[in-house]
Length: 434
Ligand code: S3P
Image (cartoon, rainbow, N blue to C red):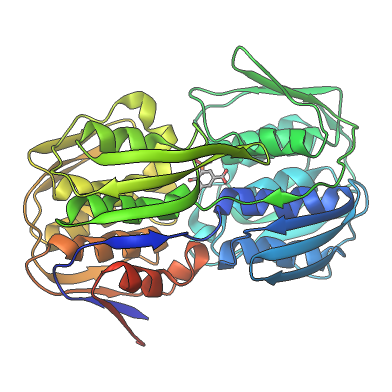
């Protein structure tokens, strides 16, 4: 599928973007392993989260839905999973494979985890290393890429792990393996990352401590079923936050957005660039902060992105690069080498597309320099990455010519219905089958 965008337009109205991807995955995992029935609402019916649902079904968990964002899980308890008949195919989803590798390292059965071409190119040494230290037997191919083979039947030992990179997936993997380990499992991180796993474990009645940067739990406890209301995904909202900021005449309200402080780097960065963003109706829903966000057009200026905001905005940089492309002056990003190992190398893929649109940029090992200007039109390659596709779609609001974006099927991994919602809010987008 391709996107075709006519230049110009303003973003107005009100919308609730689909459910948070990170929270949707975790709701399925913990609901499946809890004792009792868990009801999830606001679930993201995107391919990534559905891959997690399929994996637990393949391990014998009775899951009803999703239907209109509602999922009911009949939890089997921490020791109730059954060996899957075949390899678990996690599609494009890094969160599924990395969190599941932790959960499955402590099971009595063997299993294999695999995915699509993009996932099979992503580094898994980062989870293989700590799990091996805990006593798991887990192997990848070509120096630590999927498919991952987990031997099972090993008894795990709690460890302390000092994370070498700021990664919530690695942190979560180790903590989830820790549920099955003897004694205490703890982690420290080089910078705070999204804490949905810790919050949700507590929501399922599992004690997790978080003191002076050390996150810890004891193995051998139990999860008690609970109900989960998944907020709208700030990572999906980010496309419209940028869209409304750059398009003159825009005034948009995004409702029920998750504003967990480990995810709101995009708000801080846009505010520093001069964006007009206000949070309303702030509340806590099921342990996660939520708000309605109003954003109006404002002239943006280039900035040096503060290093401490980088892990807090890691998924939003493709959209933020479009904000930088439409800002006045230069934007500089450092310390974001993790962008190179996402669904695509997001520094290279964004730089290529920006260059196509005539936006001057310089690629750095760990970031990028972008000179704000006026994007032209052109044909963009997404490198099969959902966030690259959606980012260049919003660039059309300020472009001088038509933008065609090839290969947009992956948008369905995180944001099903993006094109229809974008059209409803004012983007001149149409889709073409390829
Ligand atoms: C995620 C963590 C982040 C993020 C990904 C989702 C999670 O990955 O990029 O989209 O749900 O834990 P890393 O942990 O690799 O930074």
